[in-house]
Image 1 (cartoon, rainbow, N blue to C red):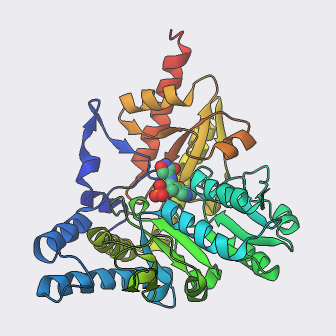
Image 2: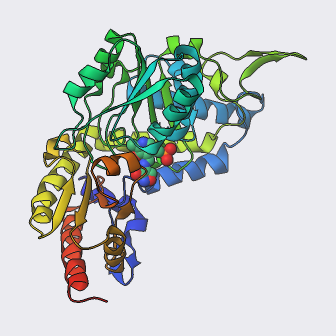
Image 3: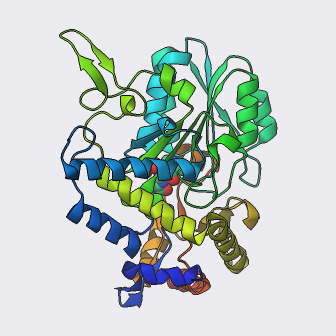
Length: 410
Ligand SMILES: Cc1ncc(COP(=O)(O)O)c(CNc2co[nH]c2=O)c1O
């Protein structure tokens, strides 16, 4: 089945919005869940649901084996060496917070440095701000080039002795750009620092091998890759997870509880306190299988072709301002832009009136927008189920909105 034929698996996309066919271009915020994944979730809930790990009855055994099979599916998807390195979380934000709290306590001392970049999402900024405050450490930002790419020369100058953690997005949810995290991991390890990767915008769009990247931690979210909200993954090298203390405490994560102290369960359960999101994990595994059936490289190619197709048409619009690279080969299908004289919220509202769903605002990247000297932007973000017709609708609706606002609209 061709990539865009996959759209048939998403009934939600075949609806009218404001009497116009929906054109959904907000995939960097959340993607949609295909029918096969919904069916797998329903089947689990209707045939196998029970609490995991401790029950001895048949349903508990069945739920446990499906939950742990989901973990194995995640392991192979990101090419981790062991399921002990795969934690289920609520999403990227939770994973990055766990690393900042637990690894931060372990490796960061007063006067140390933590390095992030100017293009990070708030979830890969604020946990590090809080760690730096707690530990009297310094938070340092790698600058960007004129094209909105990470400035690797600046990275080499800033990732030096005294840096303990480097945490960078594999791809930006605003600029779309893919960062050379393998090279950054090498720089980090050369100075004895730990490499953390925010994989929220990359994992849905490209093949990821955490072993090839040689990163120490990698976090991502299911809702950005055809799974429901509330489920995500934190990958960590086993050597680090063995050293790190749990962040949440209670059931599931203990071995023995005495009056005054407790002992912890083995990995990965040491970090999974309480009843996990069992159905979410099973749905995430189903989404991974769905994406693997299409092929992540096919998805990357399809999105880059869409960007190559639509960017020249957008850049030809008078007053169109692009933030991020023009080179589609460095893209994960995210286009942040403004139309001179039209507030992005007005633009997004006008596009919604034409059935086109885009995002407007700061995209949880206020430091990036300040760095770009812009208050807010519009953002169109593609996924494999978008088509060239969707891209044409984007262009046509922007032109119509521009005319509407420039014809003396009060
Ligand atoms: C690069 C990046 N990092 C972290 C997150 C946080 O993921 P969460 O924990 O699942 O929320 C997001 C979500 N990005 C967006 C969520 O809504 N609009 C967005 O651009 C993201 O794109």
